[in-house]
Image 1 (cartoon, helix red, strand yellow):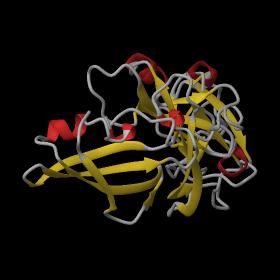
Image 2: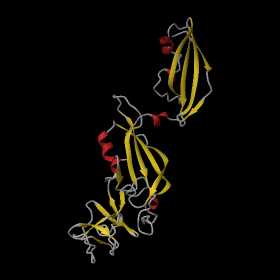
Image 3: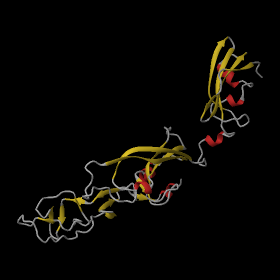
Image 4: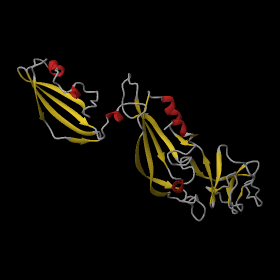
Length: 308
């Protein structure tokens, strides 16, 4: 049995952190000869014996300590410990059974607006795109879900990143959520068996952003049309070449009064526009006075496979 004596002296006021209250105390020790002997002494408090384990009896968790020599056989031990916000530290310890951690953020960006809330394309009275795009500040939500996992599965991450949900997810309908990235939320050692993996998603409400807000939309407009055999430059009846003419989604101008130049460069009096079908991969969307072409440039995946 040792003959050392301990005196507990507060070194600093308690400081609050997200993990609970942080305390730093100094233990003055007399009668021992080495720092190792100090830490091995029978009288040393159990929750300070190791910087890692949680001492259930006291509810305290030591995370830092330092032994200082103050004189012959006199040492001081600076020890910092935490009292958790709840009574149990185990909820903060790595475990596959830990609950998911959710964090919501709001993202604000200035974007070019091409449709109104009814899905109609924003155009001039001549059915042309505005010369200066309409800009608007809009918000959308970003959700980070952190989950403890047995290692980082890069293949799993890459199969979901830059995809859109094909099923309902976290209160949002299909097509409203994009998976931004899946990666460890902190650095980790090669020997780590459990790693916190952050899953980041962005949400766009279709009532504000329109249907399929993460896919690519473009106004169907061009300066050539299909006559059944050739692509012809679109002109007015006076022979003026026209550009950015609203099209019907199938290679024909919406304004059937427009014509083209024939093989001799003469204005065709009776133009015969023909359908060239819908471009491969495109979906024609009726956007009021004009047509839009939608291309699914982000794959749709069932997010239920993430098991979140």
